[in-house]
Length: 358
Image (tube, rainbow, N blue to C red; front, side, top):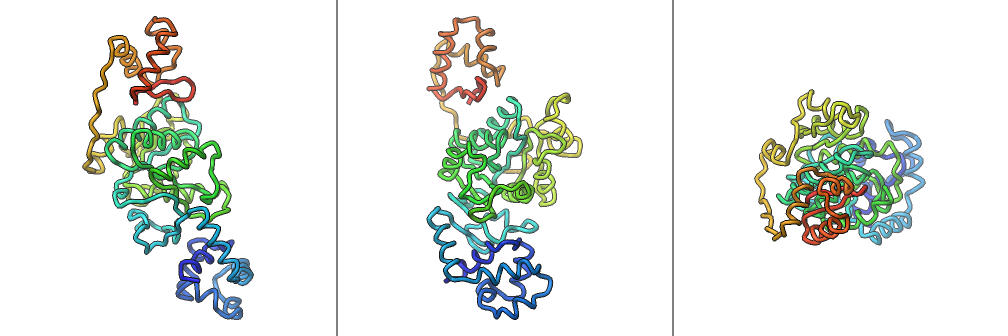
Protein backbone atom coordinates (compact mmCIF):
# COMPACT_ATOMS: atom_id res chain seq x y z
CA UNK A 1 0.00 0.00 0.00
CA UNK A 2 1.22 3.53 -0.74
CA UNK A 3 0.54 6.84 1.03
CA UNK A 4 -2.21 7.78 -1.39
CA UNK A 5 -4.10 4.52 -0.82
CA UNK A 6 -3.91 4.94 2.96
CA UNK A 7 -5.24 8.49 2.56
CA UNK A 8 -8.14 7.30 0.42
CA UNK A 9 -8.91 4.68 3.09
CA UNK A 10 -9.01 7.30 5.86
CA UNK A 11 -11.07 9.71 3.77
CA UNK A 12 -13.67 7.00 3.13
CA UNK A 13 -14.32 6.16 6.78
CA UNK A 14 -17.85 7.12 7.78
CA UNK A 15 -17.99 10.18 10.01
CA UNK A 16 -14.63 11.64 8.96
CA UNK A 17 -14.98 15.08 7.45
CA UNK A 18 -12.31 17.66 6.68
CA UNK A 19 -11.97 18.88 10.29
CA UNK A 20 -11.69 15.39 11.82
CA UNK A 21 -9.26 14.40 9.11
CA UNK A 22 -7.12 17.44 9.88
CA UNK A 23 -7.12 16.65 13.61
CA UNK A 24 -6.15 13.02 13.03
CA UNK A 25 -3.29 13.98 10.71
CA UNK A 26 -1.97 16.48 13.26
CA UNK A 27 -1.86 13.71 15.87
CA UNK A 28 -0.45 10.89 13.72
CA UNK A 29 1.39 12.67 10.90
CA UNK A 30 -0.10 10.59 8.09
CA UNK A 31 -2.86 8.08 7.30
CA UNK A 32 -0.51 5.09 7.28
CA UNK A 33 0.41 5.74 10.92
CA UNK A 34 -3.30 5.75 11.82
CA UNK A 35 -3.79 2.44 10.04
CA UNK A 36 -0.86 0.85 11.90
CA UNK A 37 -1.29 2.47 15.33
CA UNK A 38 -2.10 0.18 18.31
CA UNK A 39 -5.83 -0.09 19.00
CA UNK A 40 -5.21 1.17 22.55
CA UNK A 41 -3.87 4.47 21.21
CA UNK A 42 -6.83 4.89 18.84
CA UNK A 43 -9.27 4.20 21.69
CA UNK A 44 -7.66 6.87 23.88
CA UNK A 45 -7.93 9.66 21.30
CA UNK A 46 -9.35 12.88 22.72
CA UNK A 47 -11.64 15.16 20.71
CA UNK A 48 -12.53 12.40 18.23
CA UNK A 49 -16.11 11.08 18.21
CA UNK A 50 -16.35 7.52 19.59
CA UNK A 51 -18.36 6.55 16.49
CA UNK A 52 -15.41 7.61 14.28
CA UNK A 53 -12.96 5.71 16.50
CA UNK A 54 -15.12 2.58 16.16
CA UNK A 55 -15.20 2.95 12.34
CA UNK A 56 -11.43 3.42 12.09
CA UNK A 57 -10.76 0.22 14.02
CA UNK A 58 -13.46 -1.73 12.17
CA UNK A 59 -12.10 -0.79 8.74
CA UNK A 60 -8.36 -1.32 9.33
CA UNK A 61 -8.23 -4.03 6.73
CA UNK A 62 -5.75 -4.28 3.85
CA UNK A 63 -8.27 -6.17 1.70
CA UNK A 64 -10.80 -3.36 2.17
CA UNK A 65 -8.24 -0.77 1.01
CA UNK A 66 -7.39 -2.86 -2.04
CA UNK A 67 -11.04 -3.32 -2.98
CA UNK A 68 -11.77 0.37 -2.52
CA UNK A 69 -8.84 1.62 -4.60
CA UNK A 70 -9.55 -0.95 -7.33
CA UNK A 71 -13.17 0.23 -7.57
CA UNK A 72 -11.99 3.81 -7.98
CA UNK A 73 -9.43 2.84 -10.65
CA UNK A 74 -11.97 0.77 -12.61
CA UNK A 75 -14.24 3.79 -12.82
CA UNK A 76 -11.34 5.87 -14.25
CA UNK A 77 -11.45 8.25 -11.31
CA UNK A 78 -8.29 10.13 -10.41
CA UNK A 79 -7.81 11.09 -6.74
CA UNK A 80 -5.72 14.20 -6.07
CA UNK A 81 -4.63 15.74 -2.78
CA UNK A 82 -3.99 19.38 -1.93
CA UNK A 83 -0.25 19.11 -2.61
CA UNK A 84 -0.75 17.44 -5.99
CA UNK A 85 0.20 19.61 -8.98
CA UNK A 86 -3.15 18.72 -10.58
CA UNK A 87 -5.09 20.20 -7.64
CA UNK A 88 -6.97 23.34 -8.81
CA UNK A 89 -4.88 26.41 -8.02
CA UNK A 90 -7.80 28.62 -6.94
CA UNK A 91 -9.13 25.97 -4.58
CA UNK A 92 -5.91 25.66 -2.55
CA UNK A 93 -6.40 29.00 -0.85
CA UNK A 94 -10.04 28.94 0.26
CA UNK A 95 -11.14 28.26 3.81
CA UNK A 96 -11.59 24.50 4.32
CA UNK A 97 -10.40 23.24 0.91
CA UNK A 98 -11.11 19.52 0.31
CA UNK A 99 -8.22 17.28 1.38
CA UNK A 100 -8.97 15.00 -1.54
CA UNK A 101 -10.71 15.62 -4.86
CA UNK A 102 -12.13 12.84 -6.99
CA UNK A 103 -11.83 13.74 -10.65
CA UNK A 104 -12.80 12.54 -14.11
CA UNK A 105 -11.40 14.51 -17.02
CA UNK A 106 -8.67 17.14 -16.91
CA UNK A 107 -7.96 20.33 -15.02
CA UNK A 108 -5.54 22.71 -16.72
CA UNK A 109 -3.55 25.73 -15.51
CA UNK A 110 -5.74 27.93 -17.71
CA UNK A 111 -8.71 27.03 -15.49
CA UNK A 112 -7.37 29.54 -12.99
CA UNK A 113 -9.47 32.12 -14.90
CA UNK A 114 -12.66 30.05 -14.68
CA UNK A 115 -16.02 31.76 -14.14
CA UNK A 116 -18.93 30.05 -12.38
CA UNK A 117 -22.51 30.33 -13.60
CA UNK A 118 -25.22 29.22 -11.15
CA UNK A 119 -28.93 29.72 -10.72
CA UNK A 120 -32.37 28.27 -10.24
CA UNK A 121 -33.15 24.63 -10.94
CA UNK A 122 -36.66 25.60 -12.05
CA UNK A 123 -35.36 28.37 -14.26
CA UNK A 124 -37.53 30.33 -16.66
CA UNK A 125 -37.00 30.14 -20.42
CA UNK A 126 -35.27 33.51 -20.17
CA UNK A 127 -32.97 32.28 -17.39
CA UNK A 128 -31.99 29.20 -19.39
CA UNK A 129 -31.29 31.33 -22.45
CA UNK A 130 -29.13 33.79 -20.49
CA UNK A 131 -27.12 30.97 -18.87
CA UNK A 132 -26.55 29.34 -22.26
CA UNK A 133 -25.61 32.63 -23.92
CA UNK A 134 -23.21 33.81 -21.20
CA UNK A 135 -21.51 30.39 -21.03
CA UNK A 136 -21.21 30.29 -24.82
CA UNK A 137 -19.69 33.75 -24.96
CA UNK A 138 -17.19 32.83 -22.22
CA UNK A 139 -16.31 29.65 -24.12
CA UNK A 140 -15.66 31.67 -27.28
CA UNK A 141 -13.15 33.68 -25.25
CA UNK A 142 -11.51 30.48 -23.97
CA UNK A 143 -12.78 30.92 -20.40
CA UNK A 144 -13.69 27.74 -18.52
CA UNK A 145 -17.24 27.63 -17.14
CA UNK A 146 -17.87 26.06 -13.72
CA UNK A 147 -21.29 24.94 -12.47
CA UNK A 148 -23.03 22.20 -10.49
CA UNK A 149 -24.74 20.11 -13.23
CA UNK A 150 -28.16 20.59 -11.61
CA UNK A 151 -31.37 21.11 -13.60
CA UNK A 152 -32.07 24.52 -15.10
CA UNK A 153 -29.37 27.18 -15.15
CA UNK A 154 -26.49 24.80 -14.35
CA UNK A 155 -27.38 22.43 -17.19
CA UNK A 156 -27.69 25.25 -19.71
CA UNK A 157 -24.38 26.77 -18.59
CA UNK A 158 -22.56 23.49 -19.21
CA UNK A 159 -24.30 23.05 -22.58
CA UNK A 160 -23.56 26.62 -23.62
CA UNK A 161 -19.86 26.10 -23.00
CA UNK A 162 -19.68 22.69 -24.69
CA UNK A 163 -21.73 23.62 -27.76
CA UNK A 164 -19.51 26.62 -28.36
CA UNK A 165 -16.28 24.64 -28.31
CA UNK A 166 -15.30 25.47 -24.74
CA UNK A 167 -14.32 23.77 -21.51
CA UNK A 168 -16.53 23.30 -18.48
CA UNK A 169 -16.15 21.83 -14.99
CA UNK A 170 -19.02 20.25 -13.04
CA UNK A 171 -18.84 20.01 -9.24
CA UNK A 172 -21.06 17.25 -7.86
CA UNK A 173 -22.62 16.78 -4.44
CA UNK A 174 -22.22 12.99 -4.62
CA UNK A 175 -19.70 10.37 -5.69
CA UNK A 176 -18.57 10.35 -9.31
CA UNK A 177 -20.11 6.90 -9.80
CA UNK A 178 -23.53 8.55 -9.45
CA UNK A 179 -24.99 10.88 -12.08
CA UNK A 180 -27.29 13.40 -10.43
CA UNK A 181 -29.70 14.20 -11.92
CA UNK A 182 -29.86 10.96 -13.93
CA UNK A 183 -31.17 12.79 -16.99
CA UNK A 184 -27.78 14.52 -17.31
CA UNK A 185 -25.87 11.28 -17.87
CA UNK A 186 -24.87 12.08 -21.47
CA UNK A 187 -24.05 15.66 -20.49
CA UNK A 188 -21.78 14.32 -17.75
CA UNK A 189 -19.90 12.20 -20.30
CA UNK A 190 -19.41 15.24 -22.54
CA UNK A 191 -18.11 17.30 -19.62
CA UNK A 192 -15.57 14.57 -18.80
CA UNK A 193 -14.28 14.76 -22.40
CA UNK A 194 -14.15 18.57 -22.54
CA UNK A 195 -13.27 19.57 -19.01
CA UNK A 196 -13.73 17.75 -15.73
CA UNK A 197 -16.30 16.38 -13.31
CA UNK A 198 -15.10 16.65 -9.71
CA UNK A 199 -16.32 15.94 -6.19
CA UNK A 200 -14.96 15.92 -2.65
CA UNK A 201 -17.17 12.87 -2.02
CA UNK A 202 -15.92 9.37 -2.66
CA UNK A 203 -17.66 6.70 -4.73
CA UNK A 204 -20.96 5.31 -3.46
CA UNK A 205 -21.80 8.63 -1.77
CA UNK A 206 -25.43 9.42 -2.55
CA UNK A 207 -26.66 12.95 -3.36
CA UNK A 208 -27.89 13.78 0.14
CA UNK A 209 -29.36 17.31 0.46
CA UNK A 210 -26.75 18.26 3.08
CA UNK A 211 -23.93 17.70 0.59
CA UNK A 212 -24.90 20.53 -1.73
CA UNK A 213 -24.30 23.61 0.45
CA UNK A 214 -20.75 22.32 1.10
CA UNK A 215 -20.36 21.57 -2.62
CA UNK A 216 -21.16 25.21 -3.41
CA UNK A 217 -17.95 26.43 -1.72
CA UNK A 218 -16.01 24.40 -4.30
CA UNK A 219 -17.93 25.92 -7.23
CA UNK A 220 -17.05 29.43 -6.06
CA UNK A 221 -13.58 28.37 -4.93
CA UNK A 222 -12.72 27.04 -8.40
CA UNK A 223 -13.61 30.37 -9.99
CA UNK A 224 -12.44 33.96 -10.21
CA UNK A 225 -16.03 35.17 -10.19
CA UNK A 226 -19.57 33.84 -9.82
CA UNK A 227 -22.52 34.85 -12.02
CA UNK A 228 -25.96 34.26 -10.51
CA UNK A 229 -28.51 34.11 -13.34
CA UNK A 230 -31.81 33.50 -11.55
CA UNK A 231 -32.46 32.85 -7.86
CA UNK A 232 -35.31 33.00 -5.39
CA UNK A 233 -34.65 34.52 -1.96
CA UNK A 234 -33.96 31.03 -0.52
CA UNK A 235 -31.98 29.69 -3.46
CA UNK A 236 -28.85 27.58 -3.02
CA UNK A 237 -27.24 29.90 -5.56
CA UNK A 238 -27.21 32.64 -2.92
CA UNK A 239 -25.19 30.29 -0.69
CA UNK A 240 -22.66 30.05 -3.53
CA UNK A 241 -22.61 33.85 -3.72
CA UNK A 242 -21.98 34.05 0.05
CA UNK A 243 -19.08 31.62 -0.23
CA UNK A 244 -17.71 33.65 -3.13
CA UNK A 245 -17.68 36.83 -1.04
CA UNK A 246 -16.01 35.03 1.87
CA UNK A 247 -13.36 33.71 -0.53
CA UNK A 248 -12.69 37.13 -2.01
CA UNK A 249 -14.30 36.29 -5.36
CA UNK A 250 -16.33 38.74 -7.43
CA UNK A 251 -20.11 38.26 -7.48
CA UNK A 252 -22.21 39.16 -10.50
CA UNK A 253 -25.98 38.96 -10.97
CA UNK A 254 -28.29 39.11 -13.97
CA UNK A 255 -31.05 41.71 -13.40
CA UNK A 256 -34.57 40.34 -13.65
CA UNK A 257 -38.25 41.20 -13.72
CA UNK A 258 -39.21 42.72 -10.35
CA UNK A 259 -42.46 40.76 -10.43
CA UNK A 260 -40.73 37.39 -10.80
CA UNK A 261 -39.86 35.30 -7.74
CA UNK A 262 -36.87 33.97 -9.69
CA UNK A 263 -35.44 37.50 -9.86
CA UNK A 264 -35.83 38.36 -6.18
CA UNK A 265 -32.49 36.80 -5.25
CA UNK A 266 -30.49 38.32 -8.11
CA UNK A 267 -32.02 41.77 -7.70
CA UNK A 268 -31.26 41.58 -3.97
CA UNK A 269 -27.63 40.75 -4.74
CA UNK A 270 -27.39 43.80 -7.01
CA UNK A 271 -28.83 46.05 -4.29
CA UNK A 272 -26.20 44.65 -1.92
CA UNK A 273 -23.33 45.43 -4.28
CA UNK A 274 -23.09 42.64 -6.85
CA UNK A 275 -22.22 43.90 -10.32
CA UNK A 276 -25.16 43.63 -12.77
CA UNK A 277 -24.39 41.60 -15.88
CA UNK A 278 -25.81 42.22 -19.33
CA UNK A 279 -22.99 40.55 -21.29
CA UNK A 280 -19.68 38.78 -20.63
CA UNK A 281 -17.69 41.98 -21.16
CA UNK A 282 -19.09 43.20 -17.81
CA UNK A 283 -17.53 40.15 -16.18
CA UNK A 284 -14.20 40.12 -18.00
CA UNK A 285 -13.66 43.84 -17.42
CA UNK A 286 -14.26 43.52 -13.68
CA UNK A 287 -12.02 40.43 -13.39
CA UNK A 288 -9.37 42.00 -15.66
CA UNK A 289 -9.09 38.86 -17.77
CA UNK A 290 -7.45 39.19 -21.18
CA UNK A 291 -8.99 36.77 -23.65
CA UNK A 292 -8.61 35.47 -27.17
CA UNK A 293 -11.99 36.00 -28.75
CA UNK A 294 -12.66 33.38 -31.40
CA UNK A 295 -13.63 35.21 -34.55
CA UNK A 296 -17.04 34.31 -35.87
CA UNK A 297 -17.07 32.94 -39.39
CA UNK A 298 -19.47 34.82 -41.67
CA UNK A 299 -22.04 32.40 -43.02
CA UNK A 300 -23.75 33.40 -46.28
CA UNK A 301 -27.55 33.68 -45.96
CA UNK A 302 -30.33 34.18 -48.48
CA UNK A 303 -32.71 37.13 -48.02
CA UNK A 304 -35.39 34.92 -46.44
CA UNK A 305 -32.87 33.19 -44.15
CA UNK A 306 -31.58 36.61 -43.06
CA UNK A 307 -35.12 37.75 -42.27
CA UNK A 308 -35.89 34.69 -40.13
CA UNK A 309 -32.50 34.91 -38.42
CA UNK A 310 -33.03 38.61 -37.71
CA UNK A 311 -36.36 38.04 -35.96
CA UNK A 312 -34.88 35.26 -33.79
CA UNK A 313 -31.89 37.49 -32.93
CA UNK A 314 -34.12 40.42 -32.03
CA UNK A 315 -36.69 38.55 -29.92
CA UNK A 316 -34.73 35.59 -28.49
CA UNK A 317 -35.66 33.37 -26.83
CA UNK A 318 -38.69 33.19 -29.11
CA UNK A 319 -41.27 30.43 -29.23
CA UNK A 320 -41.67 28.82 -32.63
CA UNK A 321 -45.39 29.64 -32.75
CA UNK A 322 -44.66 33.31 -32.10
CA UNK A 323 -42.03 33.26 -34.84
CA UNK A 324 -44.64 31.95 -37.28
CA UNK A 325 -46.96 34.83 -36.30
CA UNK A 326 -44.20 37.45 -36.61
CA UNK A 327 -43.15 36.39 -40.12
CA UNK A 328 -46.47 35.45 -41.64
CA UNK A 329 -44.90 32.82 -43.88
CA UNK A 330 -46.25 29.35 -44.30
CA UNK A 331 -45.29 27.05 -41.42
CA UNK A 332 -43.57 24.56 -43.76
CA UNK A 333 -41.39 27.28 -45.23
CA UNK A 334 -40.28 28.67 -41.85
CA UNK A 335 -39.63 25.18 -40.49
CA UNK A 336 -37.33 24.37 -43.39
CA UNK A 337 -35.48 27.68 -42.97
CA UNK A 338 -35.01 27.00 -39.25
CA UNK A 339 -33.54 23.61 -40.13
CA UNK A 340 -31.11 25.28 -42.56
CA UNK A 341 -30.08 27.84 -39.92
CA UNK A 342 -29.50 25.01 -37.44
CA UNK A 343 -27.36 23.13 -39.95
CA UNK A 344 -25.34 26.30 -40.54
CA UNK A 345 -24.73 26.47 -36.79
CA UNK A 346 -26.52 29.81 -36.36
CA UNK A 347 -29.65 28.84 -34.43
CA UNK A 348 -30.24 26.58 -31.42
CA UNK A 349 -33.57 25.07 -30.41
CA UNK A 350 -34.06 24.89 -26.63
CA UNK A 351 -36.58 22.70 -24.77
CA UNK A 352 -40.15 24.00 -25.15
CA UNK A 353 -39.72 24.93 -28.85
CA UNK A 354 -37.73 28.04 -27.99
CA UNK A 355 -35.25 29.39 -30.52
CA UNK A 356 -32.08 31.34 -29.84
CA UNK A 357 -29.09 32.51 -31.84
CA UNK A 358 -25.90 30.52 -31.14
